Length: 273
Image 1 (tube, one colour):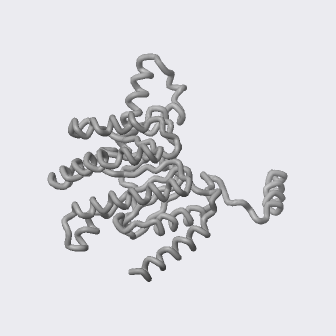
Image 2: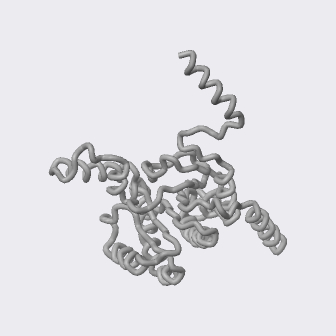
Image 3: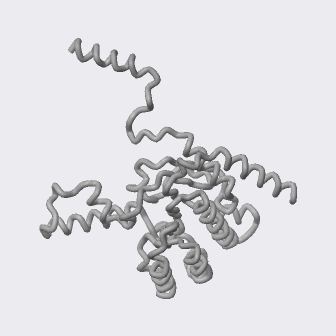
């Protein structure tokens, strides 16, 4: 065990040394996938995986904050998760409430602002109450923002935003010509939050599962086969280093190594025209 700890510490140091501290993504989003599969593989009830997943999230919040990320957005419960067995859904809702009650004081002491994104309507009043009080308690914290997406769906978010804009247009509050990306952004549940530069998905699934469909338009995507309960600081650092290796072009092109040749080539074409 001691040897494993030393190896882990050494790998952490090696990866940390590879990080460019000037290019840490400001906003990281994570699809925390694989809790149930992790537990099933170990012959345990799926609830064990969800409990372990909470511990991992606490660690990743700490790592993100230490790296000077500003925002972490996690997908905790989707609108589609209601189709899971009742016992599992009930367990998850109770887990949200229990963890929030237990951790909110420490979250506040760490100057973390917590925000819940999604439709809270179906949740029990006791959970909605602790969510509201947690957001109120931490709303002025500046060091770090933790967004937790619960009962959230990207398509539903876009539809609701479109409806709001349609109502404003039909009542004359805005003109159709006023509708642009900035206006649309202002009607989203994430308004005021910078879009994620990096999306991490665990468990190897190669899809975004109705998560932040508008906001992920130009995010870099990192997929790992590691199940969420096994996702460690080392795995997080690997994702950041991979992100830093990419050339983010936003629809443009890479820097040309022979720009003078390109310039003369396009110039000759225009003369021939």
